[in-house]
Image (cartoon, rainbow, N blue to C red; front, side):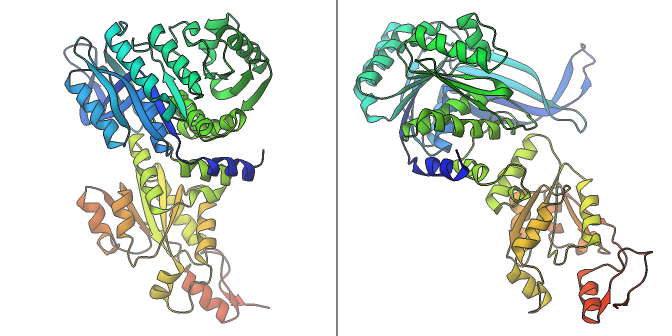
Length: 508
């Protein structure tokens, strides 16, 4: 399928209604520096500096669907405790319906508390996870309430997702009642199964999405290649009376198999995987959105493959927006043009770098007639951190700064040339007289300018210094500037390539 065809599939998906049933989990994160050992015992000391709560489990699937522009309703159970209230508030903040999230005074809200340590300049790593939960089956009264409410409401939805984390909410009776009600209403049911449960409990679903290990456990097959996944998927369809099985094979890709035993393999694009956390939730969310929006299963897998690839590029669990998937389809992932982003996207990317513990460097300029001086200072700037963001003056703002004869090169071409440099991570074109809006949005750790400035002469230094950032000046290549090059051309001369090379000479 061509990129244009896949874009048409994505654009035909409107805002379908999706019901998500499953184990609702509150994920808590405590971040800090872990650079010493306690004197009391041989354990790491975490000096905490940031705490964060996120939606987890089935609530994370709902959150991902909401970011993909679905209308989402979350169904499940929390405890009558502070964590349950916090989870409901987080759902509501993302405009996820939570009127069918029931409270059970006899069970706690499932909470996974992770402690993330940074050491030196390395990536942050999880050093401890503490779980507060029960896996006891949901009591019959709440099972029946959920089943009755779901049977009365399921016809209003375009798809049902069951996200089973094995915490006791997805009992066999509730699963079968949900599947029967959805089938009776003609609504597809997609299941991300529990690793610890029997797949027989999901009998009759439209699609089941086990990962490699889950499929191996359920079928007794060893899956080392696509043919093994095809055989396992066919077994699952027969055993579960499922219309389709989607076996996810981590970095190898996905195998979609129907009940007739026919399969199609979808390889992943090679990428430097950073973190696979959340990839499974992303796959089931994208599959549900696409199928609820009318896409066939194969096209849904193509979109899910793209979404999962974006997910593993992020640290931890992150939501992926529909516009990001569209951009990924439009542009080859290795294309320099992908580095050119709007301000809001640049801010989101900067936030992601910060979550990874990266140091962000920012510089800005006109970059009209990109020359060796620019390249030298950009390379030096990139070495000051982990990600270099470059602000480029628009054509309009260059004219204000340099006069009506400039720029010589249009903003789109200037941005493209900068994006082609390996040392540059992101490029943002801006039209303001100053880069202040970019600095406030990106919040770089280091503001850099090349030349003979003093730090206090660099525009925006006060913004960065106000929140504790630093301002640096890199070296300049003597005699090389756009103004000098243009002046030499106007005189019919050619410029020396570098100091120490032959001086300006008359063109022959």
